[in-house]
Length: 353
Ligand SMILES: [Zn+2]
Image (tube, rainbow, N blue to C red; front, side, top):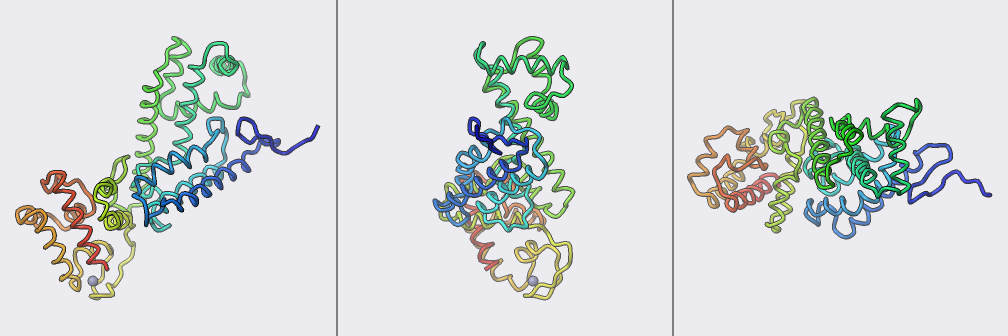
């Protein structure tokens, strides 16, 4: 019988030394390879809308990259970092963001959670599959046996799916569902469990991402304008206003820029600034003519009354609205708001050219 270092079992590579490094590295390469392949069909910042690219990444690349991750246990931090880096690369390529963009911002604009969260979701979905497996099947028999071994602590050295899923459920305050299954044999339906786990995981990730960005403190505008778990609103508008897609995506890239932590002299007017976005779009006197054109375009689209309302807001509030903050602030209906932000995107491109 031939001895080998690795063995493929139902599509998952198992290593004779119980190390998963090689497998994780291959999965990362698979993700990067698929991203390169999708780039050829338009998954890049200069082609498809980021929402479409995001859907392709999530439906084509993620299932392949995370194939079998339901049974991945004890991943090292290096392995998790490798997977996260692959996803971050995808988020930045899809949106054309500089590599120095904060990872939470790159993911947040697409409404993504990190890879670790996605693996947790897959593991929790697998738990329900095992619970719901037909009575008598081998997988269910093993699961039930292992579950009772775990619950009643008959094994001190248990490793694998059960202790792993228990930690994950506890992490999201969902362990009570497993306890209820053990005591009362009841568990949420497939749709209900999917909704419960998705809400818990995404809310937890959003909380962690907000805390990290707050700690970094250099993207306050991003956190004011886009705080949710959904794709950025300007990408949604670009889906129905395709002629403005490039300009709207440009606004997203401006929003994602971190602020400087040092003062810089403007190369146009010589004035010292710390926030380049604020200076060039709202303040630089050398760009007054281009800024006037932006306001003319806004007035043409929304009328003098709304333009006057904007004038009465603070500079910071106006810039937030220019970069996608909720337009209820300027009292516009959906169609008018879309026309407004499209005009803004053209005007800002004119200023920054
Ligand atoms: Zn200037």
